[in-house]
Amino acid sequence: MYNDTMAALIQKQKDFYRSGVTRPYEYRLRQLKKLKEALVAYEKQIIEALRKDLNKSEFEAYSTEIGMVYEELSFTIKHLRSWMVPKKVKTALTHFGSKGRIIPEPYGTTLIIAPWNYPYQLAISPLIGALAAGNTAVMKPSELTPAMSSLLAEILGGIFEAEYVAVVEGGPEVSQALLAAPVDYIFFTGSVNVGKIVMQAAAKQLIPLTLELGGKSPCIVHSDAPLKLTAQRIVFGKFTNAGQTCIAPDYLLVHHSVKKELVAYIKEAIQEFYGKDPLVNPSYGRIVSEKHFQRLTSFLQNGSIVSGGHTAPDHLTIEPTLLDQVTWDMPVMQEEIFGPILPIIEYDRIQDAVDMINDRPKPLALYLFTREPEIEEMVVESVPYGGGCINDTLMHIATPYLPFGGVGESGMGAYHGQGSFDTFSHYKSVLKQTNLFDFKFRYPSSKNGLKYLRKLLKP
Image 1 (spheres, rainbow, N blue to C red):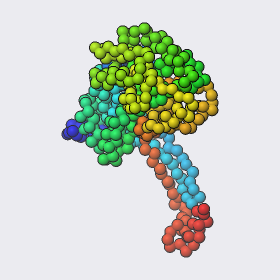
Image 2 (image 1 turned 180 degrees about the horizontal axis):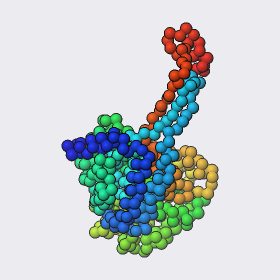
Image 3 (image 1 turned 90 degrees about the vertical axis):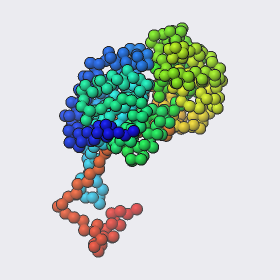
């Protein structure tokens, strides 16, 4: 568990942070630029590691991981100075003569536990926020993507001392040991079940944390949606990374009047994107492990397969699959799918779709396809969810201007852009009082103190 080596690493990071080296703007900026230079230099190796671990094509690797990290870094470098400036605030009449300000302060030593599905982007993006905010960081990559885990250790170990940024490789036992460490902040991305374990560990030491989890993210297609375009955007969102995306549409709620036509367009888009036989497409992603593959193939027994359904066990690949006639009590509807299987459920009224979603835990994402502003407003106002898109899928995660995070069982906290800086910063409130005069009525010895207080603080 939490051994002497781990304890020594955490203490080194704490000592380095307490030296004050990480706090100046110039230091933070220099480290972010150094990180960017290294990532650019290693781009080919990053692409190769993603292919080894998940069979990601160069296009998918760049569009969903590498390019997003470049954008996040550039945005952070550009805006860092303004984010760091203390914010002056007004003071109440009772505090006349004083000045108030809010100072963004680093937490100290942070722990980042990264997942396997986007093992590069979901490791580096929170690291950018941690360093921008002036923290040190210990990163634990996923053991299920060993090529990327090893490469992250090589890249970050080559540009940063372990007292500032350290990569610790290993399995669940290493994560457990790190969660027992007295770090100052935890950032975890992963499943709901493991998120509960992380939160319990943090609670034992009252360590603040961010949880980026998942859940069953719905996709609603209303009767007025442009069906061919809608189908293409659903196929993009669902089958990117072979469906192993925390914000992928988990299931489809489609108005009964357009279901048949939409399904036909989805089949057409699958063939356009991945060919007649996706299992032999060298650019189609594979499932991360045998265990996950077996779990997903068991879902193929649910409902009726209207498209796809073939598998290649030797390569851990599953065709993009559509399931019709599913019910809520089937296993495929009881947990997050996290794979290339899309169940389809009909609805008659938009309120029916809203009720089905709200009867279940709050999702990480929601997607709605409609041309009607009234429908859009009704769904956005009625359904709690982490974030999402109107007439698109996934794309809300790709802009640094929108914070990304969950709600309820899908997570807590948010990041991206200034949201990352805010997540890894404690906002310290400071009131500076004047010494030029004093209000005696605030003291218990004041004869008329209560009268003055009642005048100032009246209901």
